Image 1 (tube, one colour):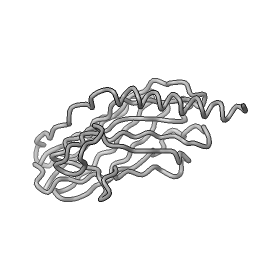
Image 2 (image 1 turned 135 degrees about the vertical axis):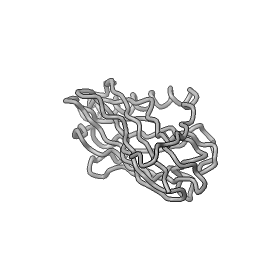
Image 3 (image 1 turned 90 degrees about the vertical axis):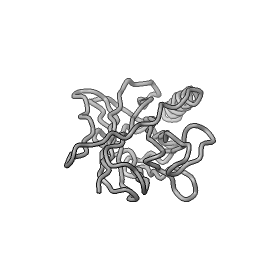
Length: 201
C-alpha cells in the first residue's frame, strides 16, 4: 500500500473511532439564553494564543431572522488534516435545519475536504426551532487526500435560525468534543472557542 492511502486510512479510522465513541455519550446540555445589557455587542471568547483551536464566529440578528456562523481553524504551527467538533445550542431559541431536516451547514470548498459531513444529535431527534435536536456534529476530512489545512482557514459555515419568539439577549453556540488529526492519522490536542448569537430588536 502506498503512503497516501495508508495515511488516509489511518485518518478515516481515527475520525470514525472518535465519532463512534462520542455517539455513545449524551450530548452536552443545551446552551441557555442570557439577557444582554442594552447595546451590548456580540463577541466570542478570544482564541487562546499559541494554541490549536476551532473557533466559531458570532453574529447579531432579530427574532425570526437567519444568520451565518463560521468555524475557523488555528493550527499554531501544527499540521492538521482533519477535524471534528460538536456545536450545542438551545433548540427553543435556535436551529440549524434545512427544510429536508439536515443541518444547514456547508464545507469551505477552498480547503479540499469533500468528505465533510454534518449530523444532528441526539440520534433520532426532531430538528428545527422548538425541536429536540440540541447539537450538530461536524466531521471535516477528505476521502481522497490528507493535505494539511492552512491556518486561519474557514472550515465550514452554518446558517442559524433565530426563533420568531426568541427572548432578547445572547444565545451561546457551545463548541465541544474538538478533535484534530494529523496527515499521518495521529490525534492532535486542541480546544474550541464558543460563538454567540446576540438577539436584538
